[in-house]
Length: 254
Ligand SMILES: Cc1cc2nc3c(=O)[nH]c(=O)nc-3n(C[C@H](O)[C@H](O)[C@H](O)COP(=O)(O)OP(=O)(O)OC[C@H]3O[C@@H](n4cnc5c(N)ncnc54)[C@H](O)[C@@H]3O)c2cc1C
Image 1 (spheres, protein in one colour):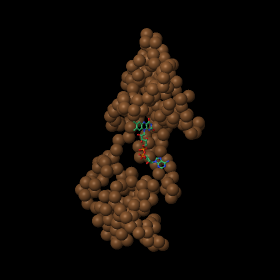
Image 2: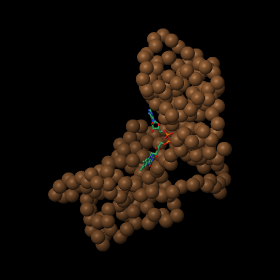
Image 3: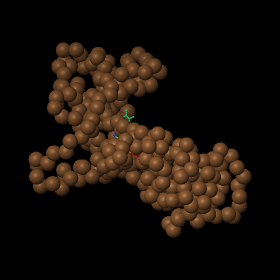
Image 4: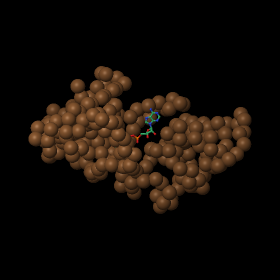
């Protein structure tokens, strides 16, 4: 069970209505059950001025239907953990039933920012820590990047250089739907999916646009090109455009 909650179930993304229905089914407090049924109902009339106090810490305006679901769950980025532990604590669905409807935790992808040709045993990547405040003032944090930040702190603060952390990772070649190639004669674009890899023909001029951490794969491209003997193939002009919101925080590669 611990393994499922740690690595299997998505506890922090907005759950589908099927999960809310399940929570409603197992809610022992009538007011929580009713609020949950309202949250997952497809349609309904707005009942003005009626407020249901569900828990000491929270209350929901009783607006039936999808708008309520959008406002309270989707827009507020309310996850299953918060619903079970904080908002609807009387709902105690059996673990097996919960597992059958809960969404699986999705992998997070990060672009390699270095070339395996230059550094065969190293993977570098850049990430932005996701933090934001919802319309109703709740502070939210990205699941994976907050965890990565904690790991990084460990490395940054540690006086011991031998600290090791074991991560489970997998590789997936990135595919993009649009690639712009600027040649001397024309600007061409492709709308069919292509592997997002360093072009074979190094003599072609290339324009790369990578805002924020989107610059990371292009840093890998540049490193790859530097590691190759490009002189033998001709050396096209490569242009990299980068932009960021906060120079002091996001100007990753100067
Ligand atoms: C092919 C590919 C390559 C990628 N490469 C990189 C990379 O190199 N570096 C990198 O940092 N990321 C990269 N990403 C994104 C990365 O995979 C994660 O999605 C991202 O880091 C956030 O993960 P998280 O678990 O921290 O956030 P989550 O817990 O998944 O939260 C993110 C969600 O929070 C919500 N959200 C975020 N900000 C706000 C806001 N301001 N207002 C309202 N809602 C908000 C959105 O619904 C968003 O989907 C890449 C993604 C793909 C698909």
